[in-house]
Length: 315
Image (cartoon, rainbow, N blue to C red; front, side, top):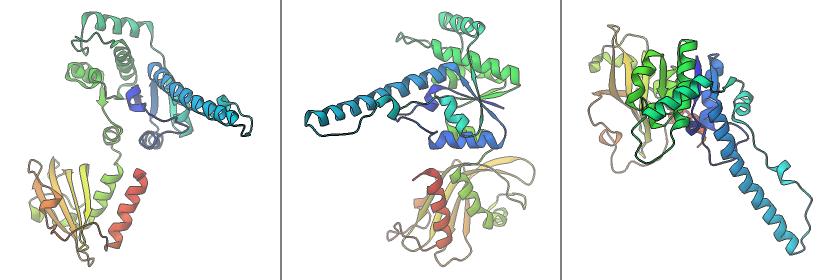
């Protein structure tokens, strides 16, 4: 599987010496599954331009600080700002994470295809009344389609409306190109659970056998396909609550999405579970939280699980 990145996914307001947390999670997932990160040259160059601009600001600030010290005749060591503040390529950051990386340059065919789409406003190009230049987005689109056709499928991470809009869906489907707008969605697409999903499934496992009595005919083994919008709350009474939209596999072999609410008593008794239709406007606040509830933890096992989630999320 080839995983392509648009530059908006790699965007950062900081000088990067290593991959930020979400991209590191993506790199780990790809490495574990022997997937390859494919970076369009456009993405690499735009990341480089942005990082150079940030580095220039930091170098200028350091130079100005040294000049201020000199003005007041305060001694300091000699240094070269270019050696102290360096930039790194996006490809090297991914390689340092241990994942295979390929930088793909656009071919003349890619340029010609993008030029034709831009000039004639063909799919997935949107009507452009603002005079914006969407050529680079169409070049990345052409590269992504080419890679997907060659490899028998690919995944593009992009938040750009040209890539994520409806106009290009038929063409993307024909090329077996999947498009997602976030790293979390990419991890779900790759069937890799996000940290909050892992925590919710861990809490759900002890009461899985209770779900058929709630009208949800699931098989004996835990068969969660996806977890979204997971929330976790602890009250002063010590009770722990969790709520999420869960996509499960049924005993019949089919699948369905429901809202599942879990409650773990403070005294460590058996958790309880409630199931609601996915369309219902369910919330944690509606289930058992009293006015005296606040953020206090007496459920030690739950606290440890939640702390692991916070560590993974970098909070």
